[in-house]
Image 1 (cartoon, rainbow, N blue to C red):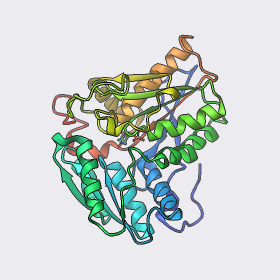
Image 2: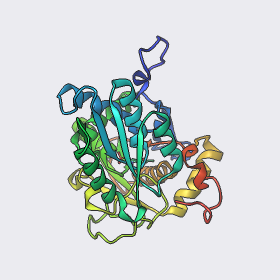
Image 3: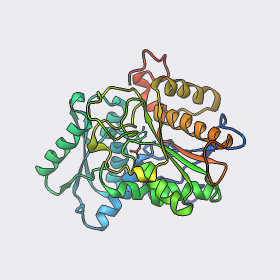
Image 4: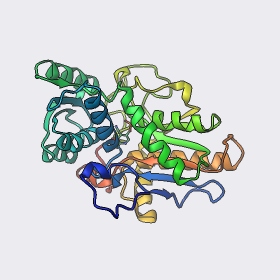
Length: 326
Ligand code: PMP
């Protein structure tokens, strides 16, 4: 891990190289290690794609110098893109369904971005359509489209995956990650399978989401409270490649909520529900590897804690389950 002892040129140089920390509740025989992505400057895993995608798009000319990005996002991607856009001289506009956390929208604005809200009932599909419409009427504007842009996967293939393997001296038995766009899991999985084609790859989603079957389109947008992972709409799961995935684990909101509290009290992690879901799924996989129920090339599991619980205080994430507004 970078110690950052030397002065750095800009905040963009602090993206990535996040700590990998052992989950204390995981089995001794098969420890789980989690990447703490709240250590990024915008405090989430999405800083990685903000920096990586904008730099690549500027390099290959997809995004003109001084141009504008218009991106549909639940929030963390907006913050990640806003941090990078500000440093790279790019204007940023984000289209966010109303229901997503108000903290995230305030942070996007604080970083100089414009936020446009779309009705919650139109889902992320509605935000995607609106982003394209706004880009069409703005000069030099492009939609990076995290939901379908292969650069999203590439960012994690180039950074998150290698960092996990470096920290664990290449001995990773399984990789486990929550899937929103699935960029994180797909990037890590591609890297992991190149290192060892037997590595177990596990996707995590809330109960009620559609990654397990990739069927059906009529799931209610508020079918679950866990924020940042899951898919209801084919427009949001284009990057997900079932061929790379051994299993999809579904986590109930109530269990994720309990794990949020446990991770804070017992392990000092101020993480949110998607990290809690990843923790539960990763611990479950570790126990099954230990018990010989599933095969893995090494006795260890690597996962990702995507962001911080602080970002969801207004939704009562640290209160009781009933009053937690997902
Ligand atoms: N957790 C949170 C809190 C997120 O905002 C996201 C991104 N939507 C994820 C997990 C999932 O990341 P990915 O889009 O790479 O699947």
